[in-house]
Image (cartoon, rainbow, N blue to C red; front, side, top):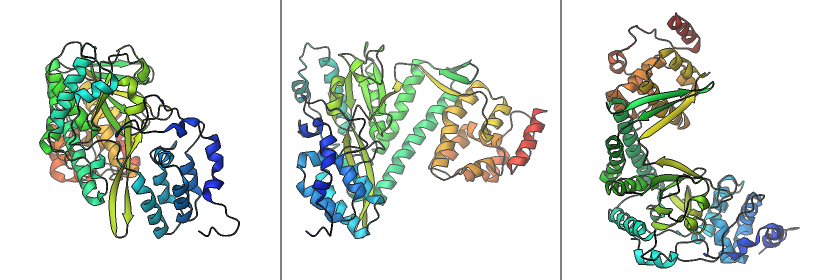
Length: 484
């Protein structure tokens, strides 16, 4: 293969990276069909390294032939390990190809070279879990404190997996048409939005929900307290919507499991939803020591059990380094076809962070916000003197929705500051359960609020008619009038 004048084979050029890379990279063997590590080899990442040798090689390559040669000369186990490991920006080596300054056909050659080495490392969604296999693998005896919980978890996971679910993030769909997967992803997100809407509508309208606030010099916290029956209804809502649609990703699978487990009304069984905060994956943790650090799985105790319905795995929390995985995805165009690919990456303690999302045993939810907001919207909210439940709804649901619409470029910061109608009209529109549904169902553009019948029919509880402000300058005048 001609490398051109003054060039060396890329495996020699990047030999330096092998010298500084930790020895643990060379100890990669497959524990089983669905694991990245051996039980005897705990993985540690070199936090001082920004990337793997493969990241470095791809970042500096000038032609596909360099990487193809590199791949053929690299131990296949080392190659697979590097292909599935993110750098400090969360990018796998294959993600770097898109930004290379090489011809499109060169990029295609790189994708075709790497994709065959990136096989799924989690079972299909239709694959059941097996109690005997799990107990043998983790040496869980029938008299072990874990055994009963593992048995119940297996029954529920298999009950869920009997449904023919579609998932937009599972490797089952890897390689399928990108537009079809994007549509599926939006449908699943729509189910999530509908569950969120029903949750906050219930908290806003249910007489069994009370609100309490706490303030310091900078922040205010508002806590919604509700009864166990309200909590159970909320759990049921988050489970039934994806079940009816037969469409779910990791969060929805976890919600379904939590609902089924909660229905058993078992004593001394703690249920929590966890997430990998700097990635995109969620799972269930049972029986974590309540006094332990949620971010440090080694402190969770001997009874802590991970139930990852999406990945089809159940294991003691002590096995997180070997068994927990996350995922990333991207669209890749080969020829005239653009397909969506899902890649599984291992949990890396030195990179990933565990975070407690929800303690299901609690019958309360808290939102926190700054007391002295300097934003345009914050100024309006401060002038409205909203009740605690209205503030809870705004900061818990409406504000994140606004941010999401901005992030999706459906509404930019300037449009938010220059809505045809004042922001408090927007707020009261959202507070009305009927219009709340209309505005949040099916990813309706926020500008649709300019529909006259919506604006005209929404009452103003404060008993005055607001001027129609169209600019930040006019708004400032309006705020002054309101203050009077």
